[in-house]
Image (cartoon, rainbow, N blue to C red; front, side, top):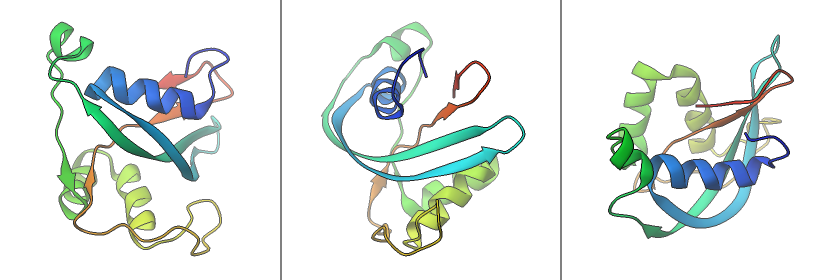
Length: 129
């Protein structure tokens, strides 16, 4: 996150910068405590895609690619490369709120397409991955 940037604004900016996707920010699905010692949190939002750019800054400057996944396929990829993120998605798929374990979030369908990116906050200087 940028200094004085809200988590929702960071999410919208990151998806635009990293995936060349614009959209309308929906509700906050949950906040995951990623690292208790360093106080990192991951905010997970719904974003309704309104525009998919053919070319965007990261695609041109560093060759970044965009890829969409069905939920089950996203889980398989995340389990190999980002297992903590896979846990988040599993909880969301089951319809559990990641912050308190109650069923307050509708389950994600296996037919839903996803793009996964994350913004982390910390009491130390913010980092975005």
